[in-house]
Length: 96
Image (tube, helix red, strand yellow):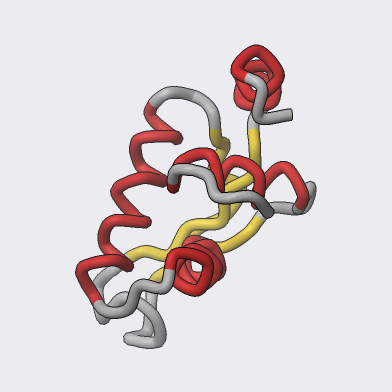
């Protein structure tokens, strides 16, 4: 993929994965692509996902409690997919 801002990268990832991706899968791919590490950047990815979800660009398709595997005990892991509105906005902004 060409270098995009984080939101664009996340949208493209989800567009390529019609069945959706878990937040920790998205975080791993973003951190790898942007050469970041650590809790701060994982948190940034989660904040980005929250922003995209609140703007109706993403849909939540599943959630479960994190057993300290990815983000920590008491955290919720969420599986997202691109919404129809998100796909439309990607076309309108040239991401697709």
